[in-house]
Amino acid sequence: MDIVHDGQTLVLRGDFDVRSTMEVRTAIWEHIHGFDEDLVVDLTGVAAIDLTAARVLAYATIDAGRSGHHLRLRGCGPAVRRMLHISRLARVVEVERTAASA
Image: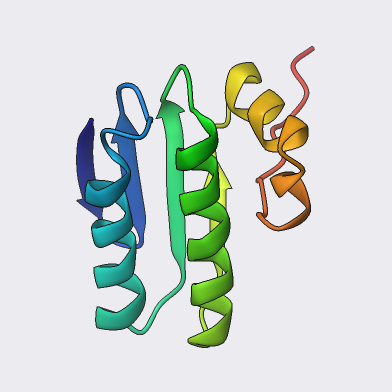
């Protein structure tokens, strides 16, 4: 998992699974508790996600709200959206809408 912090955006690339959850959780926590701005987690470079990783995003969303911040997911591909819906965590996280292509 490659994690790049770009201002208020955390860009993730690679497989987001149980092996990378601690690394991602730490990066999100450091942003939420170290900066006074909301966070966008860009998942454009993530092809697949497992249940543990989806839970990390859901708990981070809850933690951000408790801290007075807002966490939003960007660039969720079909596999990521499917996991969020199957796990029912889509109710907890906010996914940016993408513009419809013509």
